[in-house]
Amino acid sequence: MTDTDVLVQDQDGVRTLTLNRPDKLNALSTALLATLRERLDEAAQDANVRCVVLTGAGRGFSSGADLADPGAGIAPGQPVDLGIALRERYHPILETIRAMPKPVVAAVNGTAAGAGCNIALACDFIVAAESAKFIQAFIRIGLVPDAGGTWSIPRLIGRARALRWMMTGEAIDARTAEQWGLVTYVHADADFPAAVQALAGELAQAPTAALGRIKALVDAAERSDLSTQMEQEATQQKVCGQGADFMEGVMAFMQKRPAKFRGE
Image 1 (tube, rainbow, N blue to C red):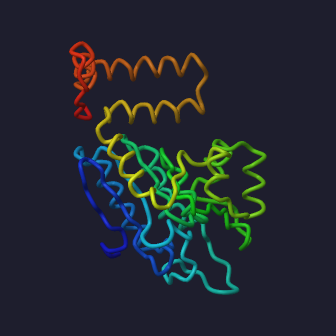
Image 2: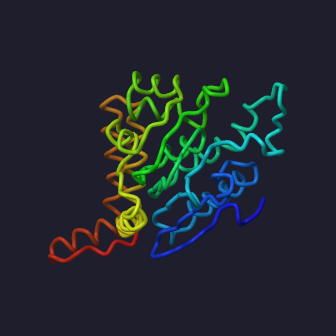
């Protein structure tokens, strides 16, 4: 594991994590995955971090699993238990992103393929450069989508499109991804860095605790009936109503000024 596999930058409450293997299109090696897991855990626990941006160095977001990585244990013509790698290396990353009590923005600056694509789709906001491509490449090598793809993709775009995309392995351009509901925003390549920075900065100034609870409630709604969901809303609203951000929000409203949330 090396610290250079994932670069870390902090600015005004935004922590940017950059996958940093540009010569390999940020392919997910065992070392990179271990570093990314640590950096995500650190961001989740750091109260000064109020928004996380995940992006890739160079010309793409991530090409997916690094099949040539010696740590992957893949040899031509030999069977391998890929479930071990998923359970030990990928699943904790996906679970941390989904459970993180603050917004996570995937800034997809180019190709996002395979598990790299599905890590991006697990984030709360998916912002794509116009030149970005999204690819479910698994079928091309006789595999099924993993890294949560079969959970997130049908929920985002529906069964018919999900099956079409995953069973054909076709590349989806950014505008099609936006039309389908895979991504939140698409920006021209020249505008992309500034647009990501602006969105992350806005989220970092928002009431972070409320954002985290919105995220949890939306995920819970997938398995709740109406009565259960309304009770969970009431429980979370009780907590928010006792927080510093709610009190600041009401005071700012009464005083007709912008609120200055602390994320509490």
